[in-house]
Length: 101
Image (cartoon, rainbow, N blue to C red; front, side, top):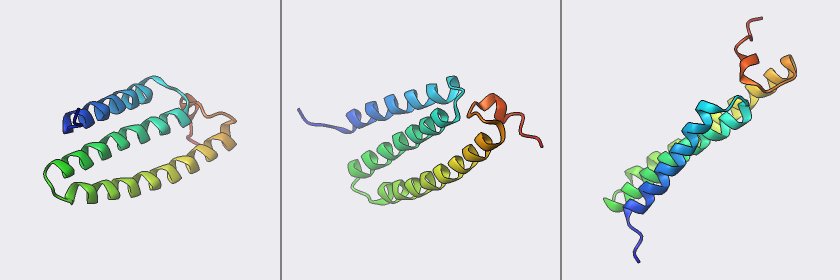
């Protein structure tokens, strides 16, 4: 059995669906950040799969940029998470909505 682009798209869709459900249903900020990473990784799988299918490196270059953006997002997100935990003593997103002062 040969692995085709369709197989990669199915895996990517499943990762995207799990990440979206995690973003929409969870109240813990750590879980939401992990779900955002899942969504970004599903995009990377799509980019790499189509880059391989069309024999073009453009998708792989965009995937590298996406990985760099994800690293920056994780650093900023963890910084916000630490500030929230020091201020409120919890990582619940409902308490983050009240960070006005």
